[in-house]
Length: 92
Figure 1: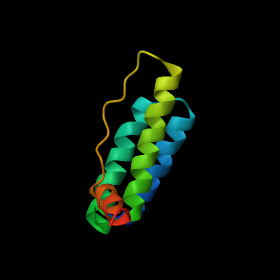
Figure 2: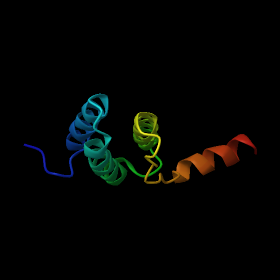
Figure 3: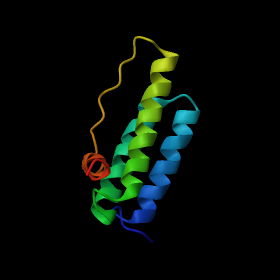
Figure 4: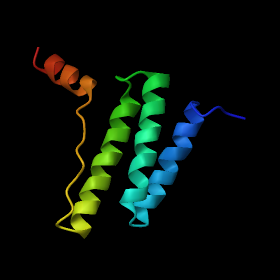
C-alpha cells in the first residue's frame, strides 16, 4: 500500500522503536528511529518540528541506555539545524 519512503512508514518505524525502548532494547530501537528520521526529513524537510521530536526520542533512548549500564556511552547525536536557528531568533 505505501512505499518504503512514505510518511506512514516513518510513523510505524517510530512506534516500533518506542516499543523496543520500553522493552529495554535500545540497540534494536536506534536503527528504527534513524530510519524514521531519514524518511521524515525527506518528506517534511529538516527543519520541521517533527524532526526535533524524533531527535528527542533518540536522546531519551540514549539516556535510558546509560541509566541501565553506566559503561554504555551514547553513539552521538547530531544537532538539528533548526535548533540553532531558533536560538538565534530568540536572541535577535
